[in-house]
Image 1 (tube, rainbow, N blue to C red):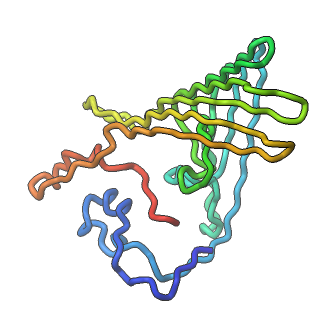
Image 2 (image 1 turned 135 degrees about the horizontal axis):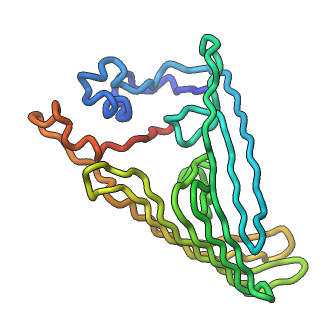
Image 3 (image 1 turned 180 degrees about the vertical axis):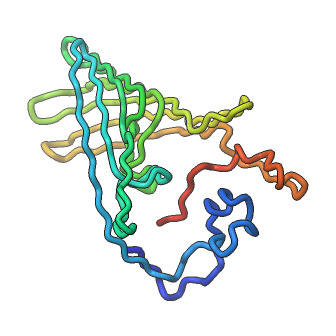
Length: 232
């Protein structure tokens, strides 16, 4: 269910995703304005099926199929009530992973490529939705400061490169480049504390405004984000 406070302003916020898709506010018509007042009740279902395969020598591969809208990257929920139309199923994950650990387990490396789960430590969905998958490559390193039968204390570092959009006839492809370092500290049994610092760079992701004379040709349409949300 999607609820809105009764004090919300009516017809005051643009739905930029629909505006960009239509090619302007005028072309979007009534759908240019975001719904801020009409509550929605939806019956939704989710089906996910996946498997991992151990290839040996530290190599693992996996894949997962999931329901959900093909245009919504942060949800695998399928809305019911579509006049009996069949649900959509798509490849949600498809990855290849290599892991290495030193003889004493002090050093651990984990390299993943493909369409993978979020490789970064994320404390809240305000940063990344838990259903969001990442396309690209990621490397994770862990160094054990202290290890016992009850607690572990490690420092970790993660780096990754993820293509967001390949732009035809242009060198301005969109990328997400990220790095993160942190400390995973267990003071006692089942009391872990994690602290980290990260840097994310969204490359070539700044939109270019079209002038009135350019709108028909849509010369800068590749700079329009293919997906965005406004909190729902």
